[in-house]
Image (cartoon, rainbow, N blue to C red):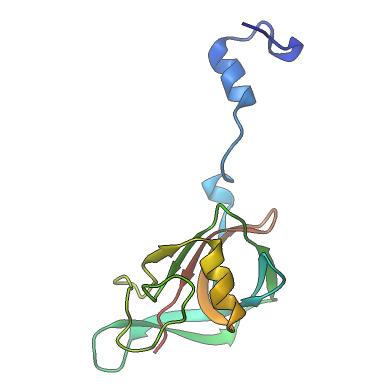
Amino acid sequence: MRHTPLLLGLSSAAALALTAVPAQAAPGSLKTVYGWAKMSGDSAMIVTPTKATLGELGESGLPGWSLGKKSGKAIRIDYTEGLRFYQVNKKCGKRAAGYPHDSYTRKGFGKTECGPGGLYEVLRKGRLAVRVVYDPAGPMAVKVTELVLP
């Protein structure tokens, strides 16, 4: 077994811990923002934070989000291959057709899992109501979820 000078004298578990590369930021350092996202280049979006309230779509009993007043400065957030994007439409990259929505959770989030290409295609067609979990150090998006709107 070949050792580098830095790792000499360490146990194999300690050497493995030093050479392992973390996949994501520590969970405590991630932030969440609700708002409107629009495209900014090929692999970034600008999110305008707003106050978000979960409610009901009319008298249907179905969940829906209302985005209210702007609640902060716009944030430019990058996204890459590791991004998890969940949208309302069953076909990735297509905009939601409206009520009744295709694929959503009990909390009014998109349920169809797509990649960053799907997010790019949807943002290319206009702004999108989203919930973004991101690492503020980059800032780099970890998870983007489309919101069901009334």
